[in-house]
Length: 73
Image 1 (cartoon, rainbow, N blue to C red):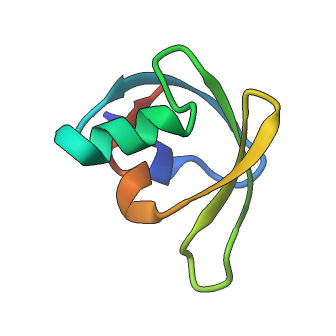
Image 2: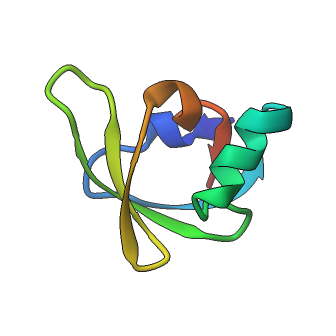
């Protein structure tokens, strides 16, 4: 299983499944990270957290802990 956390800078991925429960899962979905959405990893902060993504035409920063809950292909 590959997660969004494993995607390298400059790569694209498509979201397959969201893990987690309750408020965390709802927050991830509210950011536009839903099944079938294409995600592009723009950059990662110098210490590795957070990641800057482009999804649905806008830029988004996601913590690595949250990215580990998003399964991609």
